[in-house]
Structure formats: structure tokens, C-alpha cells
Length: 266
Image (cartoon, rainbow, N blue to C red):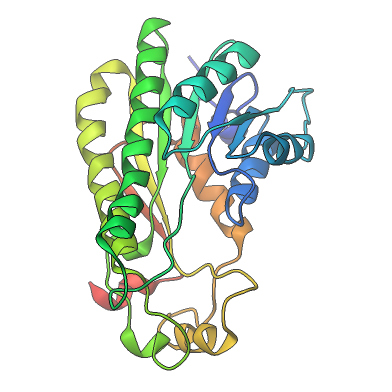
């Protein structure tokens, strides 16, 4: 039996991916990566119109019919209804990317208990969607790949001097959330490997959008071996590695794409 070629390993033709938070800054790059690799992409947003717009803008090199569904990871009922709508459209799901995120506004100095707990509820939504995906894959006796989107701030602390005098510090509840997602990934990978489901975490490093304060960005640049911030398309290859057969022996891992940020801290 011949080995698959590198093109075959990364090819997602015939597979269906459900991507939450697909219309956001990084989510758009994730959606394009999946579509460019040949997958049918079901994109979710908290608003149907926004999800439909994101799906309509995706490439379809092999004629895949993308669609949008409504999922709010903080609302369990929409997790169920959105997942069912995705399966109804595509017939089956092979890949799940947990990327939806409800952000908090305050840092450690002003965050309330309610806001802290609401931020952690993002992880609950990730788990509920992942469990639903696992049940779907097991029921059809297939295989699947789950990719949870974490952050380098789930692994390392932020530098206070990068934010001081410019904007709020990196939120403590965000760090708690992302650290929990990293470890939840390992836990689920260990339990679900027997179900032929791989579970990995993709953790972006510094990828600020255009609204980020420029002075903060310049300070962050000094903390990074590559002396620059990441661009959304630089996450596409890592996502495809974890989603495709190219990563068929990778599970329970947290892949950091951070320009070498964590190299300072080893």
C-alpha cells in the first residue's frame, strides 16, 4: 500500500467542518483555511444574518455548499439547535473548531464575580458542543477531529508593563478560561481516543486586531523573539495540520503559534 502524498494528507475534500465564531478576526481565517482545503464549512455566529454572510464569502474550489447556523456557546439551547441544523444541512460532521468567544470588559481591578463566571462559561459551551460532536461521531461509527482555540495566555502570564498606562491589563478571567481550555483538551483527548476522535488545542500568541492600541502593540513586539505580531493567515497551516489526516497521530496537544514568545519562558 502506497503512502498518502502530502497533498492527500492535507486535503479536506468530502469532509464537513463546524466552526463557531466564524465571522470574527481569527475565525474568518480559520473558515477560509477549511474551505480552501476543500471542506464543506458550517459557520456559526450568534446572529443568523452574520453567519450567512460569512458562509457566502467562503471559497468553494470543489463545489462545497457552505452554510450558516446560529450558536451562542453561552446558551445551551442554541448549541443543540445549531448542531442539529448543521447536521441537517451537511448530513454529517467530521471536524469541530470551538472558536466562539464572549469577551469580558474589565481586568483584575474591576471584574465582578458575575463577569468572571460568565467568561468561564465559554469553556462550558466548548465542552457541550464537543460532547454533542462526540455523540454524533460515535453514533455513525466514524472518526473526528476537535480543535479548541486557546491562547498563549492559557500557558503564560502577561507582562504588566505592556499594558500599564495604555489600556486595561490582560483580563484575569481570560487567562483562567484559556488555561482551563488547554487542560480540558488533554482530558477529553485521553477519554475520546478510544472513540476515534482526536482533541487538540490551537493557541495563538499575539494577534491583535487593528483596533488594538498601537503603543501596546509596540511594547508587545519587544517581548517577542520575532519582534512582530502575528497575522491571521499565519494560523491557517496549523489549523489544517490538526484538522486533517496530516495530524492523524496528534491528540491531546496544545499547539502554540506565537512567534517564539514562549521560547523566552522555557
